Amino acid sequence: MPILRQYIDSFCFREKLAIPKRSRLYHIQPIGIGTHLIESLTGYIARLAEAHCLPPGVLMTKELAPLINKSYGCVNLHRIYNLTGALNSTGVMASDLVQALETLTQQKNLHFLTWLTWSEVFPSRNLLRPHRAWCPFCYQEWHVTGQVIYDPLLWTLDGVLVCPNHQQPLSQKCPHCSENNFLLAWRSRPGYCSKCLRWLGLPLETQLSDRKESIQDELDFQIWIAKTVGELLAQSPSLKFSPLKDSIAKALCVYVDLVSEGNIAAFARQLQIPRNTVWLWCKGHCLPSMKALLQICYCLKVSILDFISQGIEPINSCEAMRLPPSQIQTKPRANSKPFDANRVMQFLEEVLASNECPSPSMEEVARRVKCDRRTIYRHFPNLCRAISAKYLNYRKASLAKNIEQSCKEVRLIALNLQSQGVYPSENRVEEHMTMPGYLRYETVRTTLQDIQSQLCK
Ligand SMILES: [Zn+2]
Ligand SMILES: [Zn+2]
Image (cartoon, rainbow, N blue to C red; front, side):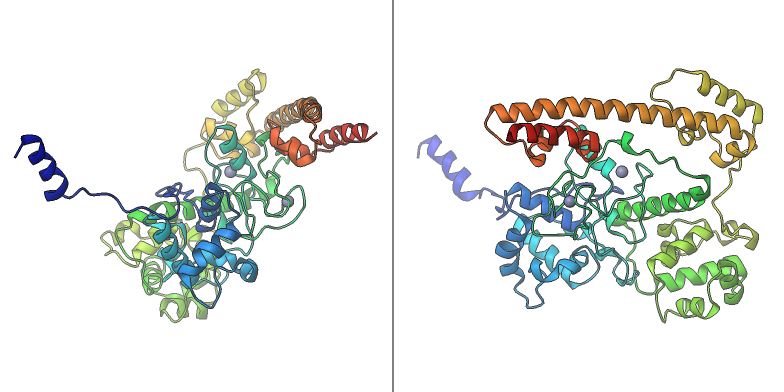
């Protein structure tokens, strides 16, 4: 037998070629596994549908429904719009969908895009919000930096109200049509409103509301929530333990021992929670809601992940962890470093005198000088106000400049479309704008309307 023939025989027949299984739908990677901004399952479906040039409603009906083949209709979007939050949650709707999507895309680990990992420890009731929430600044940042636009799972939790990256409230109403969005709708698309189909991102300069001192405590708490829940989601794929039904009860008992020497009544008093409620939780008769758990963890100065792991891992350093009752916090943590008034004053004066552009906010200044912002305000209220005013002026000027630029751009785009014989509708013009969010400003919108009415004459 010729040598070449021998070689072909051994290659093709004796050693079988391993050809990977083909997937029916695109093998799209989920975004952010192992990070605090891991993608949500509903967001993944919307991206998958977009990659196939289909509305998610069609993808659900034509591809997922035959595979799931159940009568409760988790794939019939028209029937479950109000319940689409459950597709990211802890129940059977989420697990069925994960299984079907993994079959169709040949992706593994899609359950991390839901709250399924935590199904034993978090009651599903009121866990997730019924409507979509989003950070317009994240959308815009990803758009400007050429990253993929997607919807993180963190935004679905009812208790998370702010974006941990931008420290701004999440939006729940479209700025164009003032409507809520379902978590997954027939025409869902990450970054866009599923009702009016317009862009939801906003440049950071459009955030002009200067935060009031009075809400700072609440804001600190909200940022802490977003960060601790984000950590929980980031660690989900690499957990060294399985979160079980009794984990919370065991963890609570550990902390009752640590904080109040096993006295449930004293523990409940310090946390300002009814004694019977804490007793029921400790005995494992019912589970605290996620919101209650976050409140407890905040008071105990412990992350939610560390809290839950106390109910699973053996405690080695009880003495080191012992928390005297006086240390339980009901307010945000104070800075432990002594306050160096001279150093801080000098720093503030330098900031005021500098021509730095963009001018820093007080929050940024506090971060740079490594001091608590409220402490600085207490010592130097006038300097702080001056820095805030300078920052606000910069924001206003930048906004005015961007509005002016957008007006010019809108005019050019509209005339260009007109010259191609295309009517310059808001949607069409917005698609070509560098900062599409600016069309929500009256001046920019009026500019377009003027051109439109001139064209009609
Ligand atoms: Zn953000
Ligand atoms: Zn809308």
